Image 1: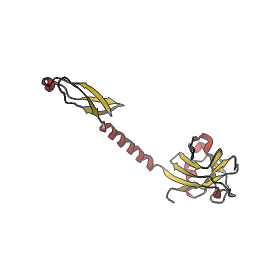
Image 2: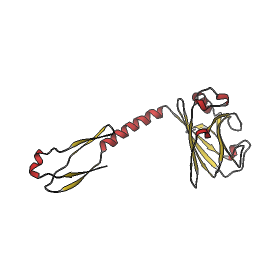
Image 3: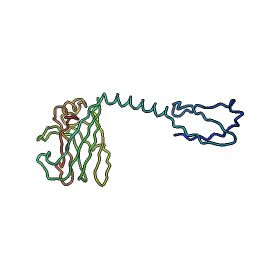
Image 4: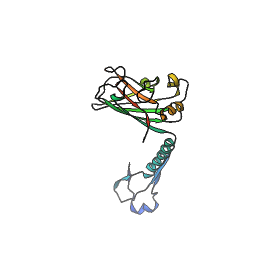
Length: 204
């Protein structure tokens, strides 16, 4: 919203006044502003710049559409019962993962957990302890609150380890699609792993 003060012109000069001007901001021609002039008064003209909003929404929607076409969404439910061997814990968590052509972005929502020490993507399906494929905490961002902990990050092919060292994100995705990859979260109380969950495609 843009607030603009105009000094009003005499009505007899209204016909010769130029009503409107173009305001450019951030390379966008936002809208033409016009106002009706009254004798010896001032007004505040409130203009809602719908043109700019429309342009931004169109560009954003187009970008999101292209972005969505080149990514796949995955999920994982993390629990102590999935750890091998199972552990007794009140903590729980969920993972959301997006995989693109050469990147993987992840987000962990954790409750009842404190002081995570390690978080890895491992090879191995249910009941199988496999090699580490990627270290999630190597470049992670933490957001803590009284109710939960949120950790986010991303990995590229350069972050892959073990049997996927020198491989691509596409190779990791193939293993994920075969239900052969899981997330394992370690803490001080459970150094061998407190939460674990197999990565599955969203909707499965």
